[in-house]
Image 1 (cartoon, rainbow, N blue to C red):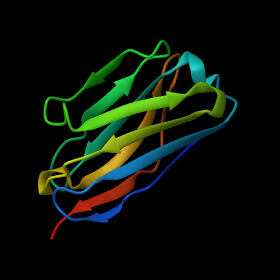
Image 2 (image 1 turned 180 degrees about the vertical axis):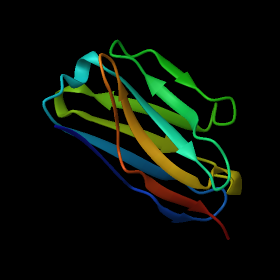
Image 3 (image 1 turned 120 degrees about the vertical axis):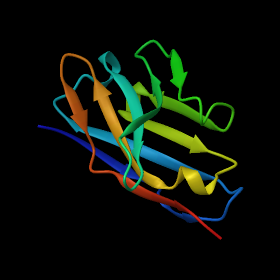
Image 4 (image 1 turned 30 degrees about the horizontal axis):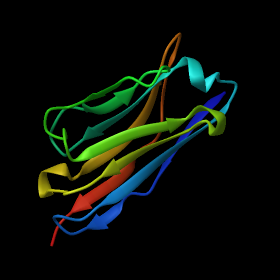
Length: 115
């Protein structure tokens, strides 16, 4: 069983910052997987926020480029999403994903950007 556990969500004011974490446990060769963050806002489809390959190549959704940064530590089976200059439209449930020979999802962490 592979488990992904997200943490770090919460309420933040516009312009603020949050750092999300994703910890993987179980029988998974973390370093062989692309790790990604997705988000889903109420009434909208789940969308890619960012991902990072096993070799460290990163990809970002257009709406977060220049504001968010994804990183990973393969030795710790952990990844992070640093979110800066947050906007109300960033409000969503954020999900961690591992994609490789199989795909795994966390249960999500809620980020609310509001004054």
